[in-house]
Image (cartoon, rainbow, N blue to C red):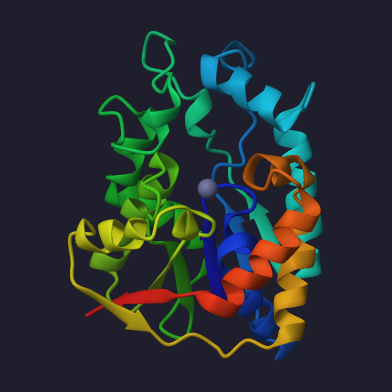
Length: 258
Ligand SMILES: [Zn+2]
């Protein structure tokens, strides 16, 4: 099985959609696990960044329900299964006093806040083992982990959790995927992610993708309609053109530990 750790609804499709399409075409089992798929507490829905993104995404009410529906449609387009985790996104996370931890945009692409409640969880061996136990993973499976390009704190937390799992279960195969569109925002983002990873990485083999798989990826990304205009000002047409160009020039790149 290929288990894709997707911090948010859309990360796996954006970053790995074409390779997932290739895997499912040859009947490999693929499961996309959207970890930050949890419903926020009502008290946190008006945290500053939660309000900001609700306006950017132009969603009036239940953001999480909508993003889950988009995710279900996208994973079906790729022929993959899905699982929605119950962690909430950084924009909804608060400290012990209920104050938001991440209040300004730059804060969510940087260091994990020391009071982040997820930090304790991802640093806890028993908690991490329990999270992965339902999948019954063995050495024939591959876990696909966000590399941390763009340094979104949610991506860094998921990577940190995966590395803890990998340290204790070295037989598990793990690859680290470059995150699109962060990878095209600034070419130095990848070098930064690799150089600050904390271990030596080398490029990992990825499946050769064909034009049908790229088309399938674009159709999957199109399911995330609430997100398109935030990333591409013209929305759907911009996404299709830019994603095609990205796949021709750079393409999906994985890394692995040396
Ligand atoms: Zn993300």
